[in-house]
Length: 326
Image 1 (cartoon, rainbow, N blue to C red):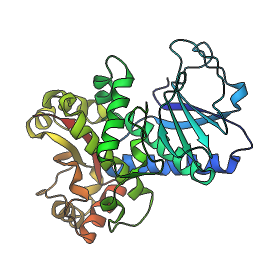
Image 2 (image 1 turned 180 degrees about the horizontal axis):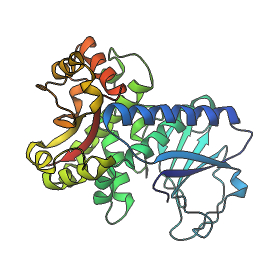
Image 3 (image 1 turned 45 degrees about the horizontal axis):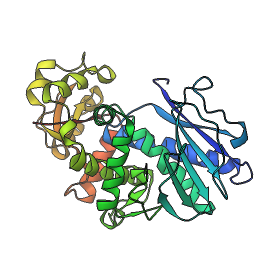
Image 4 (image 1 turned 60 degrees about the horizontal axis):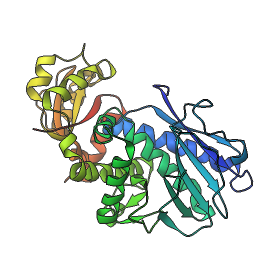
C-alpha cells in the first residue's frame, strides 16, 4: 500500500446511499485527521474510500492491494468470490439488526445500522483505521499482530465489551471479529465542556484508544531508547533537536514531545505564554519538552486549554506522540 494513502474499498448498492453522503464522510474524515495531527501529534497516511458496486468488486490480490473492504448491503450478505490472502472484509447491513455480531467467512465481522446512521458510522470506522495506521500506534499494532491481525482485533472487541461504554453500533457480540474503537462513547467524554467539533470528536476517539492500549497492549510499548530514536526519525525532527537531549529527557508512558518552533520566538510575550501553559521555563527555538499526552485536557481550565490549542494551531508548538515503557 502507498505510504501516503490507505485505500478502503466500499462495495455498495448505489441506491442505498447517495454520493453526497460519501463526500460528507470524506470531508469529515479529513477534518478529524487534521485535528489528530495538529493537536495530538498523531499522524499517518490519509484514509480514503473508493466506491464500487458490490457486483463489480473482485476480491483477489491480483486485482488490488487494498487491505480492507467494507461491503454495504440490505437483506442477506452477498455471495463473494474470495482468494486466500485477500482483504479483510467488514459487512454492513443497512436496516439489519443493530450492533456488531459474529460473521462467517469471508467476513471478519458484520454490523447492522440504520440508513441515516451509516455516514457517521463509516466516518468512525475510517477514523479507527487512520489511528491504527498512525506512526505512533502502528508499531504497537504490528507487535500485537505478529502472528495475524485477528489477535489484535480480538483484543479490541474484548476491551470494548468490558470498558467501552456506548457505541453507534451496539450491542457487541463477544465473538465479533472486529469493532471500531472510534465509535465508542463514554458519558464523561461526551459531557466535557469543549465545543462539539471535529477536534472534540477526534479527542474522544483518541482517549478511547489510549485506554485500550494502556490496558491491553502496554507490554508492547517501545523501550525508551527505541521511542527516542523513532521520534528523531519523524518529520525531520532529527536535524532540529539534539539526539542526546531527546534520550536524556524522554519520559515513559503515553506521552508527547512538544517541540518549540522558530515561530515561538517572534515575540517575548509568545515565549512567556508558552512557558506558562506548557509548564516550561524559557523555551528556546527548536527545544522540546516531554509531557503526558493527556496534559491538553487533564485538569485544564477552559482558558488554559484554549491557549494551548491556539499555540499549537498557529504552528508555534508542534506535538509528536509516543508510547514508551520504563
